[in-house]
Image (tube, rainbow, N blue to C red; front, top):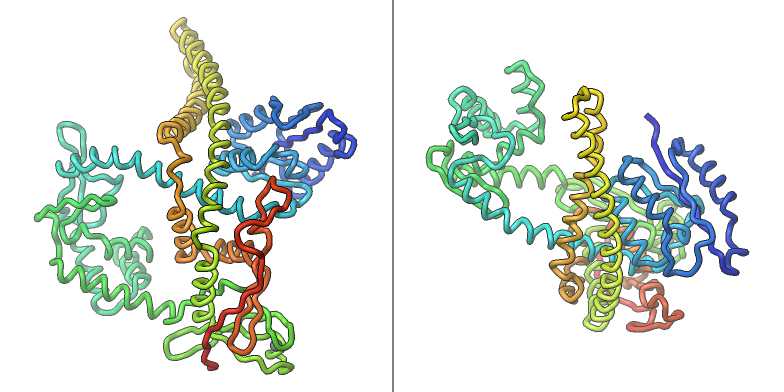
Length: 500
Ligand SMILES: [Zn+2]
């Protein structure tokens, strides 16, 4: 099945329009782009003669709604300025599309406009999302804890060695399952014999004549505290003696052994290679590239001058894990000082405040939409009661219900955002946490792109790194390039690297 997309085009009325790409040309280029990418265009929307930044763009709203409702894959526009009027809009609608699994395509690849602050804002939004989810969860968690205490298992499926028995109230309660307990015991035995999770899975599939076991599932079983009698759900832990298979001590041993094997597998020095593409050799000016080597503790990673690989430079070889650790700490320390944090926080607050106006607009739109859908549903139901064959309208009814569910979900999300009053809650500590969490994560692709937005290049020579920060970081949008906070500057830091 091919990807489905919509095209949105816009021109303004004011004099600027003369310099803009004409609407028909925008559309034809979007269509050409779609064709090249194998995207089937299912609808085209255009706003003509829309001027000024505060004007509503009726077709744009239509386009967004259409894309969300009809589950299209791509939203195609000619360039960034066609999509959003300002940054707040961009952030809001990009997120909305992304949440619905719709990819935004620009025919003309945009230059990164203030990448750092948009990155930051996105990070903060994500953080806030998590925060709200947490707040909402807190309420529901209390209910869940009560039901777990009544032995009601909080997940759909219970692991091997257990069964869920439905009670008179229709709710499933968890008990040990004598029929499958031997499978769990077998897993334990094999694990203690030194078999890996994958081998255990193969063994079980062969023995039991199934294919339901895999590495992940075995690991989940071995890590599940249920086998020592604890039903765990988030932070909730409820203990039942009769659910226990093994002692706390045995269970703990398994966890330690799992960690040990995991480390061995990964190699002692887990290189993150954060600075690929940023590091330069100070001796010859060539890029530092990456190499791996095998050592006692597993795989080792290095940054090596490209010319050194061809014996044209004598630059030393740098152990990547040391460099990554040192540089990421240096850079975070440099950026995360009080002044910059204050500055960034203020900017974010402002952005979010403005974005919340979009929420209100969107909310109104959704309400109207919901009412329409409800009317349509009611009409169909009336038709059924009046004697029409329900089968003829079943699909339509399902479709409308699905749309209504989507709208309701978004409405409740907006409601949460509103009631919790976002803006004043952001503080520098949170901004700092967003960065620190990112760098500590395993999402190397994102980490690399994060450093790439912050840093122009890093030159290494003679045990010294010169870190050249990207000026974009310090320019506040809308202030005509006013440089605030830190001056974009070259700064030298020293790290001691042992040549291996
Ligand atoms: Zn070199």
